[in-house]
Image (cartoon, rainbow, N blue to C red; front, side, top):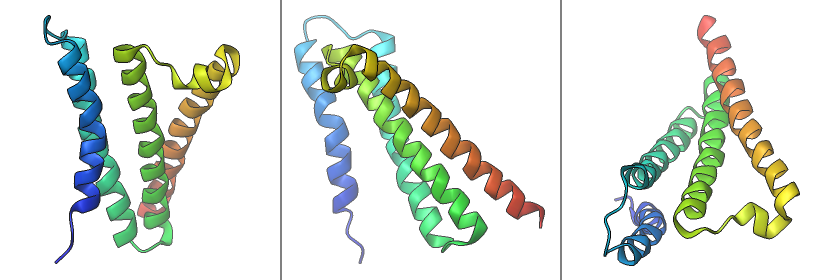
Length: 132
């Protein structure tokens, strides 16, 4: 029987900041944007888990390597979305605090390009393999 511990721990990692934020904002309700922003994180986590599982089950090859690139793109995207939510809800900008405002903006831009590039190249590999 396979254990679900990593999935449960990962869900807790995403849910605990949301619970802390909810406790802080208990006196006035959250806005719709804040609710939807927090709701996107578990769905991104599900996409990451299943994309890596799918890539592993494809065992390499053109489809597997394309799916692996997509999975890594989803992971970079999820980290970016988690960063955006932490910045929006708690006012803590990780990129700016670690690298300074200027380099932090460039790092954010590089993360966006990496996400799009990995996803695009993964889809391209899958497309090329599906034509054969």
